[in-house]
Image (cartoon, rainbow over all chains, first blue to last red; front, side):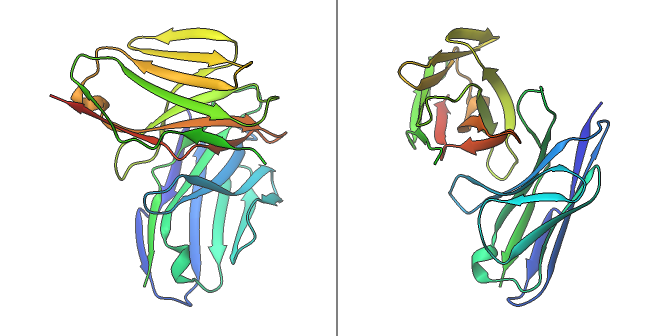
Length: 112
Length: 111
């Protein structure tokens, strides 16, 4: 069966520090991968998506970046965090012809 | 720009009642629609998806789609306190199957 792993679960980082969040999917090949952010009390905002290794599309210009070094690995990064980067970060996957997304358990990031 | 609108609520219903959640979308060409449930502090989980006009039933849940009115709804029959959560409507678009979410409706089922 397919599973998605996301870590860490919680993270507290100072302003200006770097960020690296990792997501891996098991049990499927060539998934579409997505990074979403949910600010407190708000809806889900699509940040990046990828349809293959090295293929990254950005939905919202910001100080975040994403990479897909392997088929089932998706990484969200920042060189210098801002206070406004705080939120609940969710990784998700789907496959072409499939149904909806499956989400990881999320990372709650607090920038202080 | 793809937009999905939901009543933010909160919506309160007594236990055993029918909860009705509504959603409208802006892109008339949208084909696939999803309902997710999100408990506080947790990630969203898929409840149902619907592609065709009409009703789709799964247990206590019924999704309804009216493409002419650009309207999709979710009915929860025999509501239980464990159904208390935020319900997110979502629409797929684009070649990469990007999902646009509504802001969610918070449902509380009162014992």
